[in-house]
Length: 349
Image 1 (cartoon, rainbow, N blue to C red):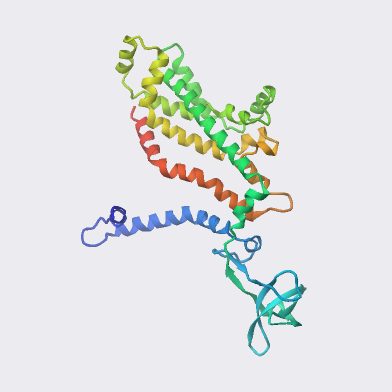
Image 2 (cartoon, rainbow, N blue to C red; image 1 turned 90 degrees about the horizontal axis):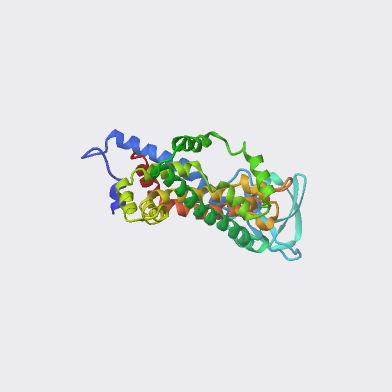
């Protein structure tokens, strides 16, 4: 009821104001623009390979109905055929040569007739191709790819939180010569596109022997200027008097950082964790240059492997795309409130 009252709120007291109609129209257009491609992707992942290639495309997963005809090993596609007298009946297609198709009546398969392809229309039925999902586990090493993506995402996120929070603590709660210059240098790296440093990163990974290793994907990206900036801005809101009281009790800097600053920075850490999960899970370029053996592929690289030079398995590609979207969608849906809270809190100072 609370959701209904929220969605039906109006500015006018007795009847909706014109601004209410404009607001709801704008929201509906935005909702359709955002979710229409996702819904189309979901429905396309439940189509057969032939249904995906059909033109004009259909929203629902319709497939051509087939029938088993005596004397034929494989089921034959079913069509509605219009004769010269205007009658319509269902017939199965045996073969097609040019514009003429050889058809048989499933009830009387002994007699074959030639029909112009313009006189027939496919008989479609609603069919959800759930095999697109189940065959992924049988034909491909989907479990291995999933484990690689989960391992990289979880480990890289934990290391990102640790490294970035330590740097933010030093830049916000300690004083040393060149502190401002170091901070500006870290922020300046935001202006460097990742593709520019791709070759140096590859050479460093190769020199330390981390090619075809999951750690070669994890380690180069654990220090992020965005994370340092976000955590530093939040840690500036923590009172310095609290830290001074801990120092008077002979607490070490590590103890202050671990027992006081980190727990108080939980909202900002949650935001950075969400961002890190999204970055690592969707990362494609760095794993592409580091990992060349299929047993180390992530889900994003596995998606790319479905696309060949001459043939693309679209039904598997779409199904796997939906599966890869589910974890990141759930993370964002349930933790999005921490994003707004953490970003707002980080901008207080």
